[in-house]
Length: 286
Image (tube, rainbow, N blue to C red; front, side, top):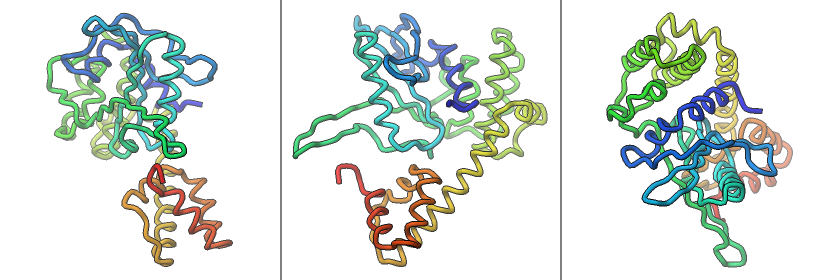
């Protein structure tokens, strides 16, 4: 089931498709033809946004997934969505991964796999990193993008106050949209700068939102993952195991429950645990 935060973000991008296209493509954004149903055939899955667009005489679908946290198998899920969207719409599909936070970014494209020495699949997708977007561009001053601008690399805590002031006086927003955007703003600003930088009014909005409890639970889960990752790295070090540079990131992507099982295995069957650990952190294709 999607989290409250995921639903708010999904509602944000689905409700403002033209502004989403500007965020993804800048001044060369394709022309929006229509936003279509984001549910995918023969699946309970739902894309974050699915837009039919046109550029240079070519019509195609843009399938967007927003990522605010690491996800093992994200590229496989994006592949699944792209294929299902292509089958339903009968159009070429451009998949886009929109990373809200640096720690959410997974392995870079392409996603590939081989079989008996043959490259069977090479799946490419576009990557947009929110912290690399230049929100000073006039095209990106749209109200629906203000909350996201606090993640810009050059933004300071004052950006949150500026964005909040603009959102509160923006006449084109419904009260529901305004509240959604303020929740996103408060969440991202708290993650980027710390909760103390939130205004009292924005803090009140956050406390009244179901997302607040969800965010607190997410912090606890992240701490569990961090502690278990450190434990497994210590286990590997004491056994003299040589792990790849990306081992820590791959362990984080496994999640707290899988890491807990590996730790239990390390106590019960250290040799088996060492083999499982090496397999879990091995680079793709190995």
